[in-house]
Length: 111
Image (cartoon, rainbow, N blue to C red; front, side):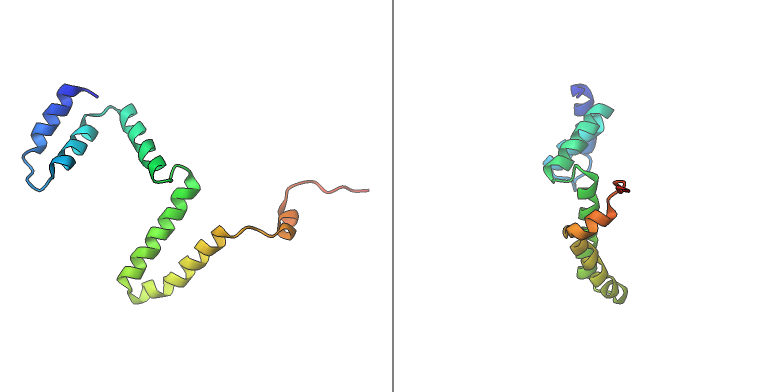
């Protein structure tokens, strides 16, 4: 990270009274970072929350949607809540071995 650029960004952010000192530092670091540093930070953030894989991010998205719908409780949200719960439940269950054998792409032996 370029220290001069960080200090300039930090000074510029001091004009915003609503930001806490910690927020100013974080924003200044993100604004002064080069693309590789930004990518590394993004990866570290995802890893720290257990969201580095695509499937984990996809599941997290549905869980956060479910929480917001439960909080808002609009009529259309109440209709979606059971469906989202069902999808989340199905994602957690594993296919029975009978279905796995039928779904596998292995060629059948013809005798």
